[in-house]
Length: 370
Image (tube, rainbow, N blue to C red; front, side, top):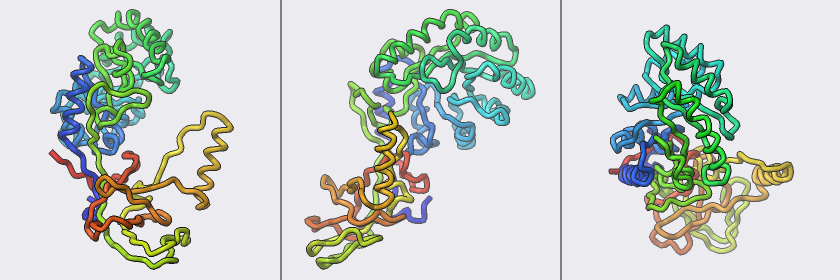
């Protein structure tokens, strides 16, 4: 728990999580693998995993062995799928926890089998087929031979065959699904009971044929629509970052606020301070994509402008239904907002803080509401 727990925290609604997964299960009409990777999208790995498991999730999906370890150490006995191939030195741990493992390369068949043999228990494998994402997975034309090798090993069990969409809501999603289904028969002959799963949140909504035996859903469970598609059922945002006002000052005209004195009051101004800043994830935006050299240059220019203080993305916090703009630079753990016209804002008042939830620091306390 943060030593500033009294000044900032995140409220996570278990009720919203429950209603969201119930809506997804009803809409999909098939099993749900609840994705809880990356600290459950910032909402808290263990609490969300327990909530989704109790609500009927067929599996829980994580990316790393360490995440699976955290669940097991917390007493979560649900079926866990590790979505990325574990490092070979962690295979014994992953198999020992009875997790389902992603196998995405034919070269991993023997190491998986050897780790399982040494432990004296079979390794459960989900064979990943790369149908167009281009990151991980075996080529469709190689999948039958690799499935045969898995099936012939007494130390491996082929539990599932799966793929992942680059754009589940776009035309490429349909093409990827067709590639996946084209090899289904050839692969399934080696494991007739293996389940098939392909749909992420976007495909669950936009590509019904991709739902198959199970859908892997993350974004929807936390109350957000995936890019490019909207759910035909209500979603509830489960995440709310809150911060209390720690100071309110009436400043005379001409007063500057923050590092560099970049903001100056043109007239008398009322300014409130919150104990949050960029170290907590406020005012931080990821730059993860450049679609061309021109776009890369444009993004680089924007980043440089912000770094040099020449341009800032507008920032604000909410008091009730109204926004209060940030004034001055966002500091490491403090920020000032203009509260002229907010007579009720005082020390102890609570502001709702907009942010990318994955960027809100894990050191910020999560409070779970029923």
